[in-house]
Length: 113
Image: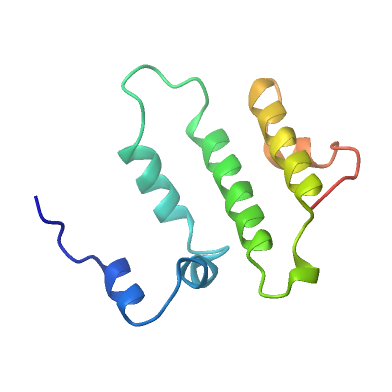
């Protein structure tokens, strides 16, 4: 089955990279994309996490990805910082009593990427 061209394919054909495309959407225009992705790839069984929790974690991962792909290597986080941030997100997901990621973020020992 042949895939049809999408708006994204057209942008890439015009020389836009995936990172540039995400940066063009970040932070204010990502929500529709994230919601559509969550709907498209939701597992059939009842979700373990709320859609808001998943959306928050996805936004954090996108932000981390953008930081990791910064043009200047000196502006990129170290792999240790990336591993710490990903570990923190995993811990956040394992503690459903945390109401939102902003509240949890303020208590993550002041560490950041």
